[in-house]
Structure formats: structure tokens, C-alpha cells
Image (cartoon, rainbow, N blue to C red; front, side, top):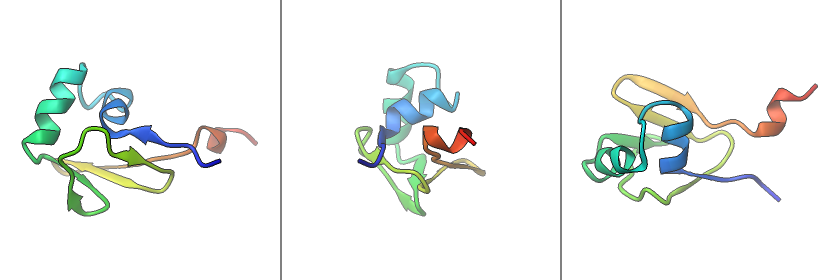
Length: 69
């Protein structure tokens, strides 16, 4: 089974935002892109390899298994 994480949770984990409310505002305002497309759904499920862009910063979603040898 492939791992997923919701967009708002990912933004908190990546320390782009400090709260779910802040994530919701950025997403609804169209400031977040996923794989080159504006994403307005905070519940969007991200998978390993997805690219999240905020301002000029690109973050690549990785699996938690990627850290293991």
C-alpha cells in the first residue's frame, strides 16, 4: 500500500505553516502548487514523488521508508 499525506499536513510537517488554519488560508488563496498545478483542496492526498511549490521553494514528497538503508 502506497503512503499518502494530506496537503495541509505536509505543509505543517515541512514547516511552511504553523497551523492548519494557516495552511487552509494559503491553499484556498491559490498560493500552493502540486506538480505544477494550483491546488485549492487542503485534503489533496500527496504521494511520494509529488512536488509541492510555495513561492519559489519546491519540496518533494518522500516516503518514510526512504530514510531506511
